[in-house]
Length: 474
Image (cartoon, rainbow, N blue to C red; front, side):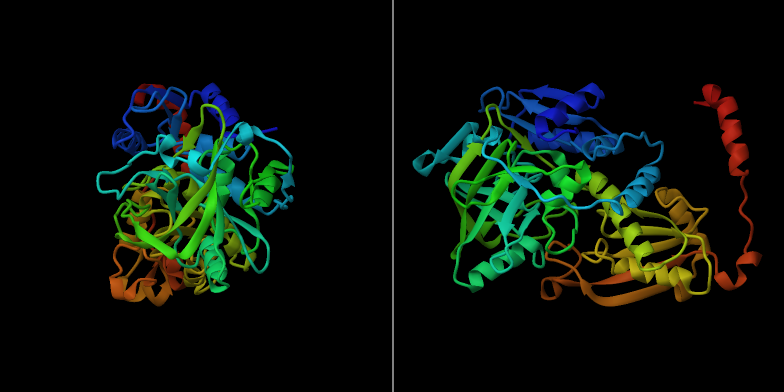
C-alpha cells in the first residue's frame, strides 16, 4: 500500500533523503521566498516548515512536495528509477492506458474528524496560511488544495485545485477560472437559485493534487481516478454540513456555501504564469460553517512564481504523458516524445518529437497537440522536432528551430483558441481567447535525405567514451 495521506508521504520522502525541516520561518513572505529560491535551483528537496511565527509548534506548511521526478514517482506509487525525465513521461503515458477508475469508499470515521469546529468556533486564521509574494492581495491558504463540489443536475463530484484566499475569520474566497468543472458546478447552482456548497481540503495525499490539477474527463471524479492509480478505493467521509465526500485522512477541511449575491474583492495573486495576470475583482465568498482538522495539521502548499516551480514540474510530467497518449489515441504515428516545458508554464511551450513518415506528418502532429484535452487550455507554442532531438533539452529544441525551420513556411497561426483570464499577454477586451503558433522544426520531408548531416559523434560511441572518461572529466 502506498502513501494514502500526507504524513505517510512525508515519511517516505524523508527516507529517500528528499525532505528538509525548517523552523521559525515567517508566514509573511519568508516561506514564499525560501520556496522560490529552492524551486529555482531545480530538483530541490521538499520543505516542511514548523514553529512558524505566530503559530504553535506542529502547525506546519509543506512546499515543493513534487518538485522532482523522484517525488512525483513516489506520489504515484511508481517503483522504477528514471535517469531521464522523458523516461518517466513514456512510462506514465503507457501506464495511463491501464488505469481503470475505482469508485471511492465512504467510511464512518477518519483522522480528519479529530477536531471539529462550527458556528462561533470557526476561525480560518487558525492555520499558518502564507502570504507568498509581496503584491498578493491577502493570505492564500489554498495553493495545493482540492476544492470539492457536486454537479446539481448530474450528481457527480469534482475535485479542482483553485486558489483560496482568507477573507475574514469566517469567510474564504475560492477563485475558479471560466470553463473549469468547479466553476460550471457553481454556475449551475446559481442558475437554479441555489447556494453552491463546497468543501476544501488543504492538506492531503499529494496524489489527489496531481489529479485535481490536471484535465481529467468531464464527469470523472478525481477520487475514483486516484483509486485507479492506487488499485483500491479511496476512503472518504461525509462532511457534516455539505454532505460532500472529503478525504478521510485529510489534514484540514473547511466546508460551507457560496451565494451569488455575496461578493467581495479578491486578489491579486501571483499565478502559474509568473505574473499578477488577474487583478482584484468581485468574487463570491464562501461562508464557512465547519472546520475539521487533525492534531498538528499540515497545509500542503504549491507556490506559484516565475517558472520553473513545483507545479510546473509535476504538471509538466503528467501533462506531457496525457498529450502523448491523446496523440497516439487519435492515430498520430511514431510520436517519440512530448514535453510540456516547465519554464513555459507547462501549457504555453509544448514540444512534440516524431519520426516523420509522410508529407504533412509534422503539421498534423502540431495542430493536433494544440487541441488535445491536455493541451487546449491556454496554449501558446507547439514545436514539432525530429526524433534525433531531445524534446526536454531546450538547447537542442532551439537549435532545431533555428536551423530546420523557415519562418515563412514553417510557422502556422491558429486564432480564437481557448485561453483564460490569467493569460498575461491578452488585453482585457480579448480575455478568454488567444492564438497558437505551430512551429515545424523538422527537416523538410520532401528533401529530408538531402538535408545537411549533423556534425557529432554517434550516440553509441559517445556513451562508450563517457563511461571511459567520466571519472576524469566530471
